[in-house]
Image 1: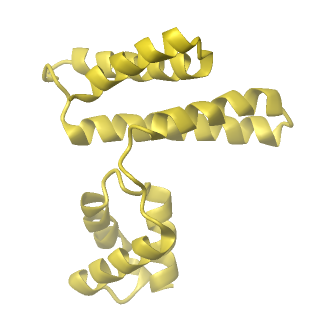
Image 2: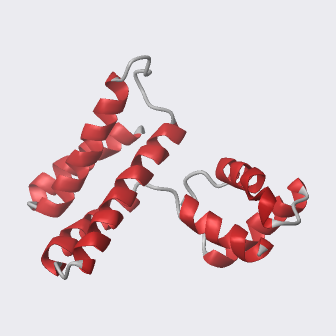
Length: 149
């Protein structure tokens, strides 16, 4: 079942349950999918990689908004953003733990043959390919810096 079909089913469930936060989150995902599909040259259905990237972008936007709200002491605005993050992450693959991420990146470093932080770019390219959807770029970057630094 495609992401779009899953979202439509969840929207119906959220409407029945009168869950406003879930409904808002799901409609945001649906909107982004439709926008991506209407871009010039886009296929009728998005690939799985495109879907994951779309969901990760939505999660990042909400986390960034929530952190800004929290810095300003606006917990009333941060809470809905964080609730939406929880809804959207349901559609992402299971995220790797820090230990799993460290092991995989260690293997990538050995494969690439990197010995210093100067080679971080090559590691990031390879890690981004292997870990697409399983971890965000910020976490990958932190582990690479820790292992090489």
